[in-house]
Image (cartoon, rainbow, N blue to C red; front, side):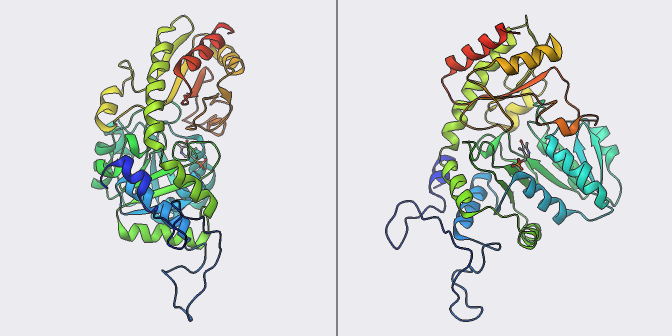
Length: 382
Ligand SMILES: *Cc1c(COP(=O)(O)O)cnc(C)c1O
């Protein structure tokens, strides 16, 4: 059972021993009968600590990322919170990239800053600027999101992780956009992989979740302790839905990549209305070669800059019919998002503010000709 697609379907999915049900039941229970005080069945005691449905998902997540330990959370941000609290304490310092998900930035800027954790924002690919950002004895973490949200910057996971290690810091990779099917950060030298499973791993815009995968047993224990002590676990039903979705991840990602490339090619040719397309699968993308090296496909996320500025961008967002105007991404259905006032509104006025002429597309798995026809008719309206 060594190949990705096979593990996605079979890891921790054994037929129910009681009934032979091919799909294991959802263990909707908060507590487990003990055979004498402290004599637990398979280690299960109370749902905040562990639940069999969640355990199964965690095994699958770890397997797909090629890591030893997997943890499933109630949201991507809950997973981030647990990582940050396990690795850092007040007085410590973290290095962030100059493009990242607005909610992650908000967590550092508006929550952890007040608890005494400082940050520096830098272009992580600029090795001398990165070197200069480490604060001796204080920098404990480098936060890498690649491809980044929403500007699709590709950051060099191997090089940045090596620099982090030289300074005794932990390299965290938010792998939400790529998924383990296209990119496996642990194999590239990162220490911790993080996901908003709400996006591609869940894949159907119907379940919120987060995941952490890592190899270091000590660190895994610390993150698991925060999860247990604070309680941001995924519910059995959410864990079950996410696990079910993993089974089609490879199929979905192949189609997202195919459709994404076709849409990016189309948009790049529309120089009459669009001045720039941000998609790592385009040869014009500055991170194209790096993406070819560290990813096995370019995914379904695309951003674009409108020559007509904010008005054109807004008009496009209001004119699509197949693309739904909504936050989030990574589902089977195509979504359009206006970062400056939606996903990245919390970054306005900050160093990672997104320009108001940028629109982000999450290209779904509908038929590519319907997707492009919808974009074409919306472009006619601007
Ligand atoms: C959505 C998202 C998150 C946050 O995840 P939630 O599940 O919404 O809490 C983190 N990182 C990236 C890249 C995201 O797109």
